[in-house]
Length: 353
Image (cartoon, rainbow, N blue to C red; front, side, top):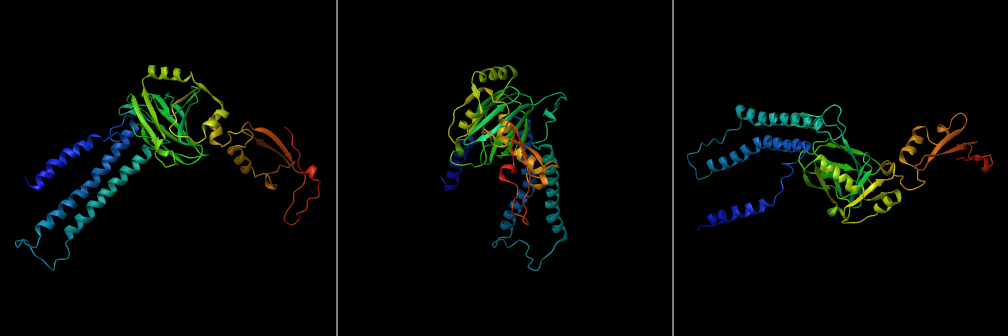
């Protein structure tokens, strides 16, 4: 048996065994958004192969046809230009680039993760009165927290949604930047502390699918995985009832959960402290800490210096996540020209609850 035949007989079974373990969920997803994204990958690949395949084939053909031993091949050492060939060489890639640009531009707007869905699946538009299921997502070190504000529950490392119901994910992070990715549902979306990103998606086929972090975030990154469950309406109602048997996710409990940990099991919370997600986004879960939105509101009003003072020199400053008003009275201001303050320090500012 020749070496070539032996290599062929061994390579094909070996390739079949290796490919049998491949998971083609990206090209065969269970959600309509991911399906459109997978189709975009296929279309882009086919368009590029229209150039790549002929180039490879012609390279091999020219190498064989004009080999040194082929005396019958045409020999033109002075040839240097062909208008027809130039048209083919430049026109074909140009048309491919135009087609790719059009497909990319349309898909970028159609599949914008911030854009609410306009269809459940091909031929089934979203009804005008349909309300999406809102799921708030917090990327922790190194686990995922999911809050259901309308249902009043929360889970860790497990999330579920009914089949053929639009989902609106509101995503943030507690410390470093992360990335939420459920290949069967939609593309990845980044999670960043102090900010909120969004993802609209829908699951069209019941099942359990893997979700994970697609952005390196430290030592426990590789185990930062969770399960996404697509359920029919009765099964989803039963799942919700199961979560309500859990404990309450208070602010103190969240601060404990926020601590770095790896390989966290699924946790269930039957109730959630009011305003917890908003406090997480604004970095003010701890008691007495000023929220980012309040700090930015003060800055937008001119700050706490001369520009931010009203005519009566009174300014209400919200302190803490509870926005407890603290009124500050400025009786004098120092400047670079007059750094000395003549007003007694005890009268410079007074606070009242």
